[in-house]
Image (cartoon, rainbow over all chains, first blue to last red; front, side):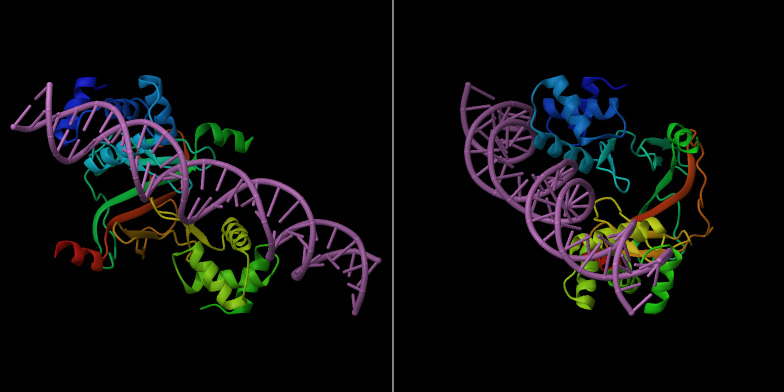
Length: 143
Length: 143
DNA sequence: GCGTCAACTTGATTCATTCAAGAAAATGGG
DNA sequence: CCCATTTTCTTGAATGAATCAAGTTGACGC
C-alpha cells in the first residue's frame, strides 16, 4: 500500500497540486477498491474532518482525468473508482447485490479485443463486464 | 420490420397485456435502435398523442423484464434500448459524442467470454463495450 | 513572505428515474 | 356481450447523483 509521500509524488507527477483532500481521496480509493463517491466522501471525512462533497467530486474528476484513478460505472450503478490502472483488467458484477470483483485480462494491454466491424471508429479500449451472481446471492436465490 | 400484429403477438407471448402504449414503445425501439427514454417518449407521442412519461418508463421496464427489448447503459449515458436480443452482440461507443453502433459477437451465445478467475460468481453474460471515437469526432479531434 | 491561480466551500440547481395514489382499460368468467 | 378483477396508465410529487456558480482559501513560484 502506498504511503502519503507516494501519493504526493503521484500528484506532482501528474502536474496536480498537492492538497490534503487529494491525498485523502487517493488514500480512500487505494484502501477501498470499487467504492462509490459517497463511501469515498465518508472515508475522507473520517480522515480530515468536514470536506465538501463538491471538493471530492472535483478531486475525483481531476484524478480520473490525470489517469491516477479509474472510474467505472456498470449499468444501474453510481460511479465507482479504483486504483488499479494501466493493466486493462475487467470486472465481474453481481446482478443482485452489485458486488464487484476484479478479473485479470488475459491479454493485458488495451484494447484487448478487436471488433469484427468497427464502423470506422478509432477504438482504444475494450471494456468487459461479466454479469452474474456473487456466491452469497447465488446461494440465496437457488435455495 | 415487424408489423403491429407482430408486436401484439410478442406481447401475448410474454404474458403481457396488449396496450397501445406498449405497441407504440415496441415500434419506437425497433425503429430507433439505441434510443434513450426521452427519444422513445417523443416517438410514442408522435404516434399516439399525449402519453405520460411514467407509462413509458413502466412499459420499458416490463418489456426489458420480459426480454422483448434490451437495456444498455454505457458509463456516463442515460438508459438506452434496443430490439436486437438473443444474439449477445456488443457495442462500440464514441467517447466524444456518445454515438453507439452494434458489433457482432464472434461467439454468439452468452457468455461469449469466460473469466480467468470468476471469484465464485455464476456468470451468465459477458458484456463488451468498445470505447473510442466515431469517424466524425475522430476527424474533428485530429484536425 | 507575497501574489497568482488553482482548489475548496457554500448553496442552489438540474434531470433521469422512481414512488404513490387514484382512474382507466384489458383479459377472462358468467 | 357485459361485468369483475387485475393490471396498466395518469397525475403529481419526490429522490438523489451529479453539476453549476460565485466567492473564499490555500498551494506553489518568485
